[in-house]
Length: 149
Picture 1 (cartoon, rainbow, N blue to C red):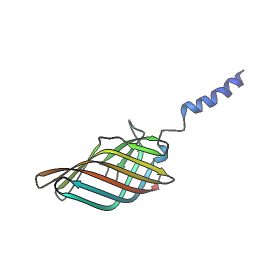
Picture 2 (cartoon, rainbow, N blue to C red):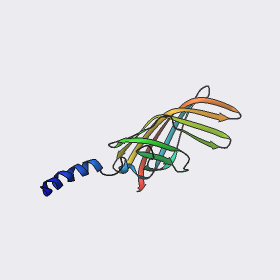
Picture 3 (cartoon, one colour):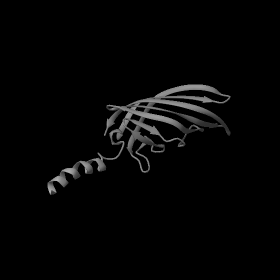
Picture 4 (cartoon, one colour):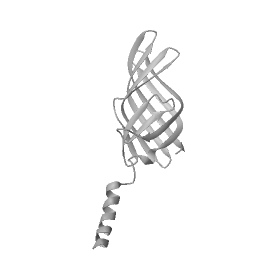
């Protein structure tokens, strides 16, 4: 009887405990090309490219959190399978040479394939320079490769 109970409990315990926190397969440091297209009301649109580095780790109230290399922008995301969906409403702000850009994420996904992530996001923005602020939108695309776990 004890043996029967043990055999029944082991699969149930494994199912109940799972295999670690959701999104653990995403954890690590990533780097790769960055493409950002901004459209600013009354000012036109522009696309810029560069390189992005970020770290993905366990979230506090989300499955994972995606943190930029400066540590100033944290994007919580919920994971289902190999897709992480960014939570809408997070705002990240940066400043360079007197120009401020504030990005509010309204949608985004990170799709994990092997050791690579395709991170696509979009939202609204506020561009501020010379005492003036302008609203707009942004689309950001990143093809990132894991460089460390």
